[in-house]
Length: 232
Figure 1 (tube, rainbow, N blue to C red):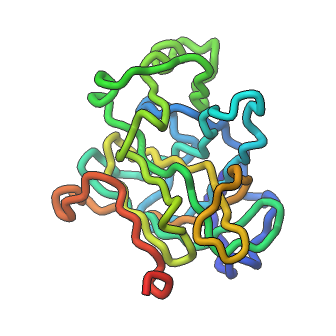
Figure 2 (tube, rainbow, N blue to C red):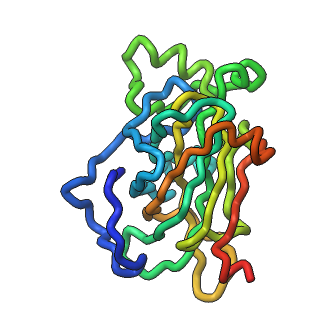
């Protein structure tokens, strides 16, 4: 589920049911620059991205790849740019309070040139709007890579919790950036991290584009910046 309008109320007051401006979008469990964007956002725009739980995956395969929400195209983004993702709010789909979360996966699509060096596994590939039976499915599935194969190209926030006020800086490798996120984990009680299975939830994000950000900031992998008060 994805919504291109973000309300301004605090995280614990946010609605947990789909709104009129929300729409269901097909998920994906592989990365490829040719997976079509499900929506686009301009620099400075905000979006809610809703993520599936681990229970939504094949329970017979505990190693199944997480189903990601996206890709989201950032207008004007090109390889070498950086998108700055500000966390506005986080919530659980079941309505329980959550002040923080760990997105197991957040990142931009890989560049086409990097796909030549990665071993791929087309079995079970979900490619969003590129569904089985379409002419493009076979070629994209043969090249698309699993999250585990992308290494430092995508971010994991298992240690650095995301709260409202956190920021993630992501290098752009493909036109439009094509941002995806998923595999949400929520700490229990006073725990700083969590071992529970991924839960259904949502992130409200504001996205800004910095041209030539890789050159200007010397960023080659995701940079996670916690909320200032929490970091102190």
